[in-house]
Image (cartoon, rainbow, N blue to C red; front, side, top):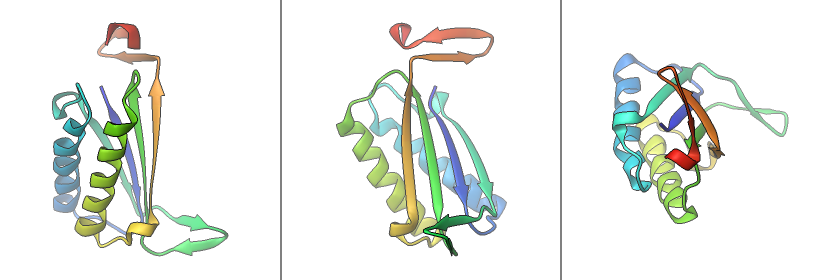
Length: 119
C-alpha cells in the first residue's frame, strides 16, 4: 500500500484536492505492482515552507512511502510525472516542489502486519 503525504502552501478547494488525489492515483501505476486501489493520500494545505530561511509562497513537499523496494527507474518516472502534474494543476513552480521516497520493510494495515518479503 503506497502512502503519499502532500504538504502544499496555499489553500486548496475540495475540487483541487480531489483532482490531485485522482492524478496521483493514475500516476502511482507508473511503479511496478502499485495501483490506485491501495493508494492512500493525505493532503495538508496552508503549509508554510521555508528554504534557506526564506518563506516560499508557492511550494509543495510530497512524502511517498512504499512497502518494499522499488526500481529507481520507476521511482524517477513517478517523481517527474507527479511534480509536473502538481506544478501544472496547482500553479507551483517546479523548482519549489520536493519529493522524498521511503521504502519500508514492514507495514501494518487493516489489522495485518505485513513485510516486504510477502509483497
